[in-house]
Structures are given as C-alpha cells and as structure tokens.
Image (cartoon, rainbow, N blue to C red; front, top):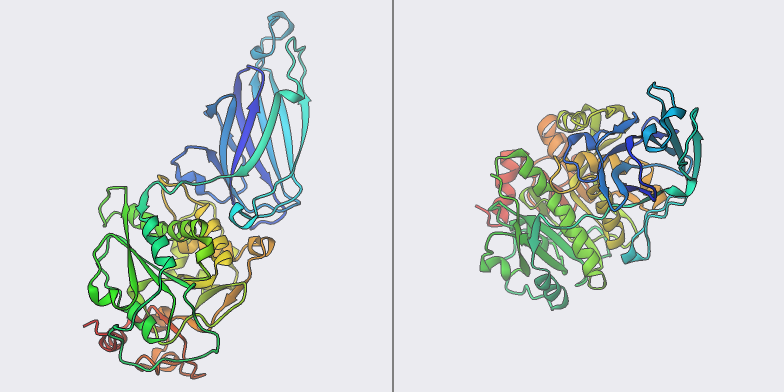
Length: 463
C-alpha cells in the first residue's frame, strides 16, 4: 500500500511544480500522496484529487514522494512536471514575454500488482510503461530528452525506530521448552471445540507498554489448554506467579516521551503492536508456526484458541454494521475525503483479537502498518484495518479472511444490545451465546459490563 514515487533527472533544469493525480476505475479506492518526509495529516487523505507540489524532497537528482494506494492493474497514476521555460532556452528572443511553460506529462500504467515480501519470497511487483508526451509552442534551444527523466515506484520500508525491544530474549524464548506445571490455573474446565490444538511453535503476543495491566488473561489461556509460547512485551516487571504460567517478559520501551494522556502517544502505542509482531515474524520466521494477538486488558479464554490449521487470517466480528456504530463511524470520519459508504453494510471487524498462520498475519500487519510513518499524526488502526480487509487487496495477495465464531467481541452487544438474550451471564467454561448455546473459545470486550468483569476476574484470581 505505501509506495515511494521516485522521479529522477539527468539534466539540470528548474522544476516549477509536479502534479500527481490518480485515474481509478472504482470510486472506493485509496490514494494519497505527499512529500517523502512529510508530517502532514494530509498524507492520509484518501481521495482522488490532483496533488500539486511546489516544494520537493530532492536528493541526488531525485524527487521523492510517498503514496498510499490500493491500485489495480487497470488503474493509472498521472504525473505532470511543469518547468520554467527559461531553464530550456539560452536565446530569450525566441520566446514571447508571456508565462509560457513546458509540460512533460508522464502516464504511468500499472501492468501488474502483487504484494509479497522477501521473507516469504515475495515483493511488490509493479511493471511500468512510461509514455512521455512533450507539448511545446516555443523553440527550445536545450531540449529535454525522453531519457532525461525516469520514474520508479517501489515499496516504502519503515524502520522500527520509535521503540525498542529485546530481540535476543525473543529468540531465546522461541527456542526453549515451556514449563507451566506450577501455574495457579483459573477456576474453570476448558471448552474444547476442535480436535485441532496448539503446539510449542504457536506464539501468542501481548503488548503492554505504558500500562500496569496484569496478564490474568494469559492464565486463562493456560487453563484452556494452550501449549505454545506467550510473549509479553512490556516496560513493566512481571510477577513470578505469571512466570510460573509460562509467560515470558520481553523488555520493551517507547523512544518518544509524551504523556499517556496525549492522544497521539496513545495511537503510537496502538501501532506499536502492529510493528512489533510484524518485526518478530520477519526476524524469527523459522521458529514460529501460528500467531495470535489479543488485547489482554479485556479478553479471557475458556479454551485453546488454536482451533484452525488453514492458511487464513481468523478475525472477530463485533456484530454491528460499521457505519452505524458511533465509535468506528467517528474514527472513519476523521480521514479527510473518506466516504463512510466504502464499508457498505459490513460489520465491524475488531482489531483487538485476531490469529492465523504466520504468513497471513504478516500480510495484514504489513498492509496496515504501511499507512503510517513514525512521526506523522496517527489514524485509528482499527479503522485502517477495516479499510484493508474490505478492499480488494486481500484477494490480490492471497490473503484469506475467516470470521471465526470462536473469537467473539461482545462489547457492543453488552452495551447496546439485549445482553441477557445474546450473551447471558455465565462463568468461564460455561459462557455461551443465548441462541445457539455455542461456547466461544475467546471472549473479547467482556469488561463493558461490571458483573461480567467481576465474575471472570474472580475465576482467574484477578480480584
């Protein structure tokens, strides 16, 4: 999604402005472009207007821009470079005194679009045909040749420079044997919905930076029968009672120094989970099998969550249409130029609980992370997650999406629905939907109701 547009020049001439505009077939496409090092929120404007630049990031005869887009094979990006005619003529008598300019228009046709990565033998592959048309009504003494200009488009690669974590500790944990025989388990009998189960190569990620949330949820994971690794990325210490449950602390810190009540800092914390998981998968691919992430402050498990063995991203449906749910609606409306109807009648997919094979998880996190550069204002990551999932990108990169009935986000139902009928109050091990009486393995957003929070916490000693 996040691409670098590089315009190179062999000749020395003054560029007056550069215009970049998309020509897409669908009204619901993402396109934004800005200077390569921009901190402007405008870089997140998902619209199809022409973007004009008179100030450029110019390095070694290269003009650099960054584009966020989900173009297809038949889409086009038009680049127009406008020059001051004085740069082309040594004979000023050959021109009139009006402001005549030379326009070189480059039509970039996207012939193929594939999103893969070097860690999995895949990269973005964008084959470009550059067609140059020169329109000029003056005699040019120093002509601009077609070969003087070239355009490249390639993936933007972000560095994980606004946070630090102990990668050596991660590698040690992934290679060691797990022992949770002395764990003080929760008080419930595990639900078993599948013969498929976890193993020691499966990895659960918990990100807990700048917060003192205690990981009792991870104890419920062990009680439910989970046998894989649990990595807790945190800047806090970890009590020995959790170490006994096979939970491994990975020391982590944010390099930005903003207060926790600062909204921008909170959003950077949100993105930290994306970048950490993505980075670990890239650097420890051989040691990882399947992956699960959950928001540990509002999730409990009543069984082993690894009930799948397919090549798919398993997601949690919140059970409400996105454009009718007030929080997600407001997050989406903060994107300049974005049409909320993009989501149609699709439900909210929660970003606080997902799992899958490592390749599928890596793909979706790469897409979502590509919409932001550290230092820029941050948009809500769940909104961007839903934009990606509802686009055509997953199909193009062989990313299968499975709405998993074992991953239930029940917050909206508890707050705005008839909780008594939909999710009647029952303890872990017996918690089930009111209609189908199905017991989901993961229960997310249970803490929206105090009585649910107190019941579950009491079962897992979190009192």
